[in-house]
Image (tube, rainbow, N blue to C red; front, top):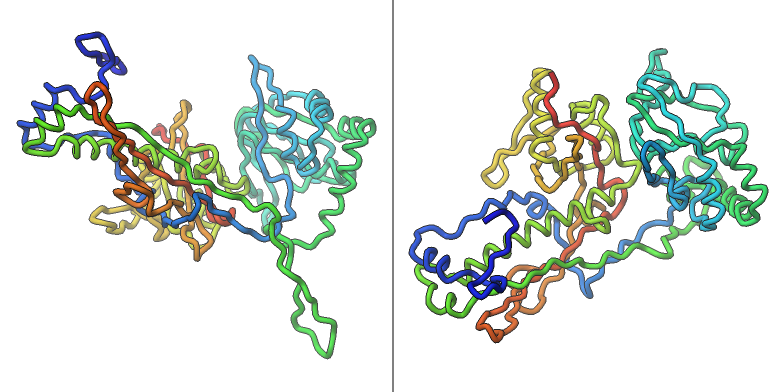
Length: 467
């Protein structure tokens, strides 16, 4: 039988439960049914789980005044690249602006340009009059170090942008040099084109007028509305009397669901339950598969998955493509109290090769009888749910966890009907006209990032072996 081929009965109908012959073979064996699908599932084991009521968890945060901190999506047709008009709303000057016709006009005025590796895109100190949207490739932001040497300030990749301040400040200059690290495809929007569109769009002019008032509000370095304080004063000055403002529409995380219906024929349940209970073994394998899918969703789901909920300023690029100690150090430096790394086993192997080249031996820690490698004392757990792209690149995740530390938490609801584990139930659905017993297997779960810097990702990590 080929992979994916549907099993059919003698009557030509799809088989819906374990075959009697297979059940009879299992009844005479000494081994419980085995499966290769079971992984270590370190994410499920290490994530602190919080019980929620009513299936919803609300994350209340301080009011954030920062704008324009997302990524931009493009459409590629042949060798032509176009920006999706609505994605221009990720630029600080256009955040929350929703006039589709004006955004479409701005998108049409973006011109495409390709840069070769090593080519300078923007030079330090020159007049800044263009916004660059990076559709593909890697760009290094170079500055001058304290001793006069060149320093790499940041590495940008697909979906990033730079020069956005030019749309609001006609006197802006480049405070760094932008250089293509690889072959790059860039869309360029000039300030001249932006001003021409603004001159004809009343809604955009009004939007910019309101937006220019935002920088006048005092914020902390995280973009939150500042709490005004007084310190080091004498006498009887007026003491500030602030209040801590909160988001008016905090994000709510609803519990997601993973379900399946297990079917067991009554003949199998009645006659082939020795030496082991066949129904229990079917349920055990089904629950294991459900937990594997649960961990996959926690990593990859577009609504609450870790890879899709990491803030843009918490995503970094490796300096040399392969994951090195410098990259892991920078990932650690983005947050306090990092509790764990998650990486695909092949990414861990690539990191190990870089350590071997430098003569470094990582420490290991015993966790549940397993020796887990660490970096700077933080364990690096394997997670095969982190995807590997066709270009043989993957990601490494760093997290601070727990409610008390304002970290990443898992969400579940205990006490559901027919529960066999917290937030996981097996519910009897009856016996149909074919004498097949039906069990509904359900898991409810989600994950929440309490503050943005609790989660960081090292993206586009190469896992191939270099010569």
